[in-house]
Image (cartoon, rainbow, N blue to C red):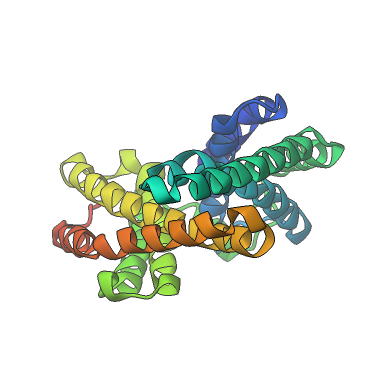
Length: 282
C-alpha cells in the first residue's frame, strides 16, 4: 500500500497548485500521479480493486487534466517546433493563437474541476479507501498472495510487464499508430514497476535497464505527443477557419518528423532487447 499512497501523495501535493489556475506544471505532475496510481492498481488487480464508482471518478479528473495538458503541449511545445518559412508564418501564427486560446480554456476547466466539491469528495474517498485497508475482507487466497515476500511479487510483476512490452513492441518501427500506442502503454507500465520496486532488484542490472527503458519510453511518448497533436490540429482544421491552413501545414511537418524517427526507434528497441531484465533479490 506504500506504493499506492506515494502516488496519492503526488496527486494531493499538486492539487493546490492546479487550483491556483496558474500552474501548467502542477497539472502535469498531478496527472502523472494519477497515472502512477492507476498503473499501480493495475499491477495489483488480482488482490486489490478500487470500487467501480470511485474508479470512474478518478478517470473523470484524469481526463480533465489530460485535456488541459494535451492542448498546453500543442500550443507551447509542439507548434513552436514547426519550422514555418516566410510564406507560412502568418498562417502558423493564426494556428498558434487558436491553440493557445483553447489551451487557456481547457486549463481553466481543469482548474475548476480541481476546485469543485466533486473533486474534494473524490480526494476524501481515495484517502478513506486506502486507510481502510481494502484487503481486510479479502479471500484466503488473496491474503496468501499479499503475504508473499515483496521481492517475489516484484520479480513476478516485472517479468509479466517485460513480456507484455516484448510482445507488443515486436517490429516496433513498423507498427501502425494504434499498435505503437499499445507498446507505449506497456513501456510506461513497465517503467513504473521498475520505479516502484527499485530497491528489490540488483542495481547492477536494474540501472542500465531503467536507462534504456526510459529512453525508449521517452521516444514513444514523443511519438504519442505527435499523434495527439495530429488529432488536435485536425480539430482546428475543421472548427477554426483562420487556423485551418496552418494546422494542415503543421500536420504534414510533424508527420514527416515521425517518419524520420523510425530508424531511431528501431535502434532503441534493439538496445532494449539486448539489455537483460533485472533479477529480484530473492
